[in-house]
Length: 206
Image (cartoon, rainbow, N blue to C red; front, top):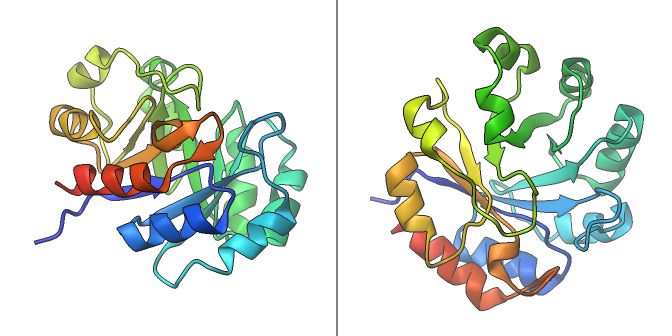
């Protein structure tokens, strides 16, 4: 029986990488609109890539500390179905995105999340919670001791330093509902390796 683990391959920028993620069985693909990222794409490029994504596979736009009006305008132009806030956005921004019809992912550091109260967690009302390393996209893992002691109450997604050779071990240890990878399936910074994408999904499913 297939694993229920949700898998997102993020930071895609070429048809080959999108096709590899879809063919490998990823549940979602991500496109980065955060300014200055080596994986940043324009809404026009993203839309051409989203058109390759079949029904049933999510298309996520990733933003970081950008005005919510810019986020919604860019997400609409790109044709993504979900917005991932990966900065210090306010809960009201999440509400705006939901009201506009987008699914919403809250991406934050594990350290920050562990320092918040349950009431603060609930304020964001995200459809998914993604816990990452302090420097997103840098390929570094984080100290997971706090999550072992105080795991999220609901389903959550693990990110930060995941690779084909460590994802199975970390999933077994932390029991997330999903995983998100970007730099861990690259041949160089910002350049995806289609074979690594396939190996990552196979390892995570295994």
